[in-house]
Length: 308
Image (cartoon, rainbow, N blue to C red; front, side):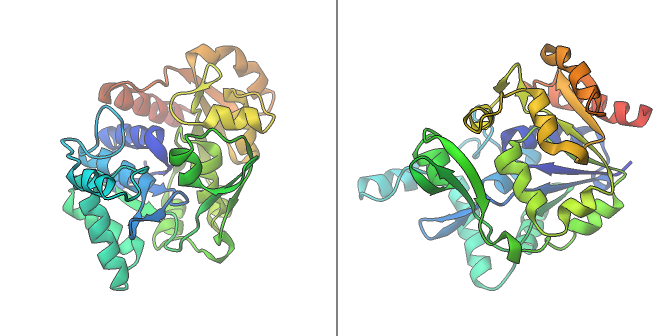
C-alpha cells in the first residue's frame, strides 16, 4: 500500500516518523509545507522541511521536536554579542544545513534537488518533497497589520490576533518535481496532525495539488485534542477566526476533501456530528509522546484504512 502524506510542523513530523517505522520506504512519500520558509542572516531557512527530515533521520532534538540534538550555540552567541538578530535561534549544527542549502541555491540548484541530496546524506528512506521550489511565504494578517509568518510565530510569540492568511506568490508556483506523481501513485493520502491554516493549506494552495489530492482516498488526523492544540497556535487561530477549536472544526475545515477522519478518544462525543457530515471517523489515542506511540498510531490508521 502506497501512502502520500501532507505534513508540516512537529505533529506532522511525528506522524510521518510513525508511518516510516511501519511502511517500506518505497511506499511512503511526504509532501512538506514550505510556506514558512524565509531568509535569515542571509540564508534560506526551511523550518518544516528540516523538522521532518531531522526527525526521520534521527537527528531531531527530542525535547523540542525541532532543531538538532547535541546542539551547540557558539555562532548564535557571537551574533548576539555583536548586536545581530538573535530572535530566531539557530544552533551550530542546524546552521550548517542552512549554509549548505543556501550555497547550492545560489549555484542554481532547486530546493527539491537539494532536499533529495540531503535525504540521501542523512540516509532517509521515504521520499521527502517540498511542496514547490518557488518561494511562497505565508503572510499573517493580524490586528497589528500583515506579518511574515516567522515574525508572527517566533518574534511575536503568536500574540497578535489573527484575521486571515495569505500565501504570497502561490499563484506563480507549481508542484515540485515528483509531487503530482506521488499523489497519483498513492493508494491513500494522509493529512497529518499539522496546523490546517499554515501547514496544510499552503500545500493544498499550490496550483494542481488540491485537485489531484481530491481524486484520492483522503484521511486526516486531528491536531486538536480536547479543544486544544498539542503544539503550536492552531487552536488560538481557530478561536480568533470565530471558530470554536475542536476536532470537528478541523474536519469541517477540510470539508469534502475528506473520506475519513481520525480523532482522539477524548473527542469521541463529536463522532455523531462528524458522521452527519458524511465523514467516516476512527477514534483512538492520537497523542504521540514517544516513538512507540507514533508507530502504534500509524499502524492503527493503516489497519483502519485497509479494513474499509
